[in-house]
Length: 486
Image (cartoon, rainbow, N blue to C red; front, side, top):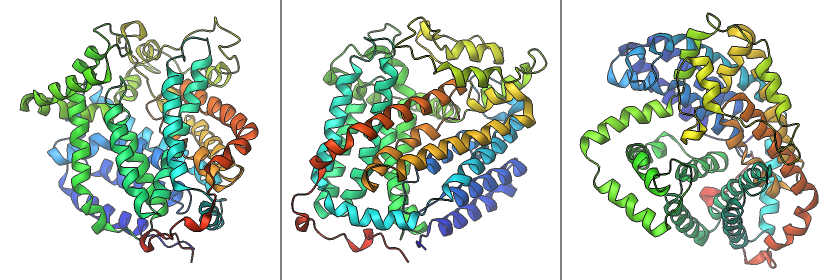
């Protein structure tokens, strides 16, 4: 078996949370939170394969539990935490239903992932990676990043092509995770990785939707998946980086409204009309002028943005008292919507998240015409369809489907290298607590179809570009990064 200290670290972390819980005003919810965290990690963690699905599920856990632990830190009741939209009176039932839904989703995923022989995969990866050049993998990541930037300029020019380009763009993160893992095996490679990541983060800040968080998340997933001799001490040493990352998220929350207005030329559209240099100058200007009052207010908005149970809580006021259960209508629409590609059905209805959310929450939310989009969340959609008990059955089946697709691309690709590239973007497909059900299903369907075509018809022609002409030139792995199987 593969030795890893992650479960030991989880036990230590859970003990700390358990010691805090009795002194907080949310004891039962805290216990459920700790239990859910342990169930997901213990069932889904598989050292030796990219643990991207676990990463996505843990982010869902964070979205469900963020306000529980924020309330504990502040010494207040769960229902007293700041909410932009309200719904605090139903926080607890929304939390319990979401926690149960996450467990059912995890169980569905587990039934498939437990069949993966991670030891065999890891042995094959260790053998096959030596046939590839770390620098060519780095170059491949840079090329695909640039290509995606160019493609995005044309994504709205042809009806239906946007979904294909978005699916292809997810491969960037597959190359990025592979780039990270391979760079750990070379002394010079990791320095280049840090440099490239720093440049990418800076460039990402000039876009309307900043992707800076993904660089940290995918690097951490790669570390947890392929470096096994970490412990709680090493995790504590990462605390300064975690604090910096969280502070950056708070600062971004504080300035993003004004910053996005500047990027879009005050048009309320999700576009960028200024140069990257001007964008960075404005970003620096907004950060430097941020005052303490705005920062403190941004903390509440950051937690409110990170958490995503408000819409579920508000829906409990509306369904079934005002609107009866839909009895499968939302699930049925989600499963059939993408069987009609917009490329061939240009008059197909446009998804308006805000309109859907407004209907079932009773809120009046800005829609896509106002440059806004508010998703109600897939678990809320499942509740609207089937109620608090039966909602968990389709969620369980969704876990089986998601994990089956992941397993297929991981094990049935050209080799383990391409398996990691194709499977790693499943973090983006598993991190969907805040997505409407129709987008959850659509993202999975489109990614599977597009990447299957690439895998089936193009990879054999592309693969030689990444190969090392003389594998003896590759330095041996550092001892700390040796991926050993015992």
